[in-house]
Length: 362
Image 1: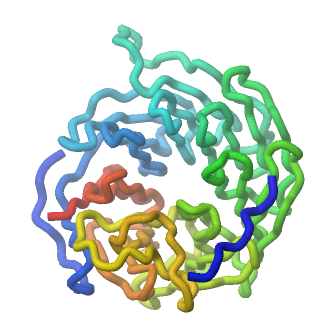
Image 2 (image 1 turned 135 degrees about the vertical axis):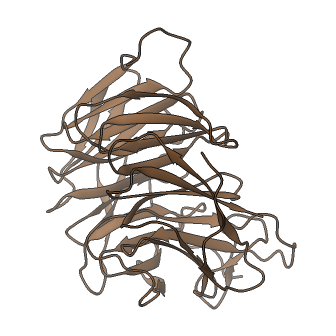
Image 3 (image 1 turned 45 degrees about the vertical axis):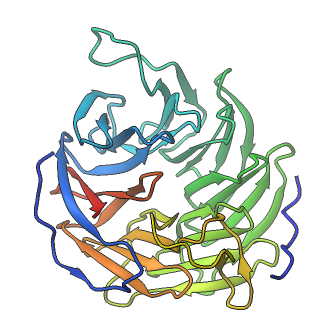
């Protein structure tokens, strides 16, 4: 698998908290509900691709399943005796996997049949790392997994067999984030050593290494929907958009005094703003010179990330301006997710808070 060639030019209700004003074209989110079930910090949040279910994971080792629309708690159980650092839901919305401090990952059905057991047994246990598993991600076809660990390695797994497919000696520091390209042929790893690496799944070969000008630890990274670009977050309170073909940073995004990320990793998610006027059909402008069609629709592309001051910051990707700052947490926000329709943002923070906050558009 080669790197893609360059594109041709061309639940209880709450009142909304105060939030900084943004451009009138951006959606406005307000605090809608606070969901409580965990006994320790909420560390990971994911929506199912069908948009029906929200899953939260915590430092208490529990998984809780919520109705994404109503906020009703459907069920919950203790998956690990130690904390869960990350979760992934398969693209077909059938399975859920965990990444835990006990050095293992577990596979569960997302929608299990009714059972009297309070703590269902996992379908598979993935054992191979020698230190806490920090990140996990399903492949686009749901048949493979990739995990990243504090042991500085990444492992590609065969889901059906529960076996190691490839072990990647990826970095010189902890692997904080892992993900797949849209075709499932390439894996990305981001590490505390300040590097992002792209790997060929079939051969295990490192295709490219990307760094940042401050050599700051990479706390989160993901492909944009087109897989021609990467979004990364580093522990220097900075987001970057890379062109993976040229390795160049196309955009550097900050919000001094508003967005702080220096100690704790938190996802930074790019998503399409919901239900805005059509406007032009050129797509999303990334490099300032040409319009690159990243997702197709003309609605603005937004980025959301959690901050160590308890805020959730939303930027307009094209202008790099802050659209809105959501305030409601008392501590560092370490978990963020966006509903597939873009109308709901969820967030979770470090203790003493133990809840999930739902932010909705009007």
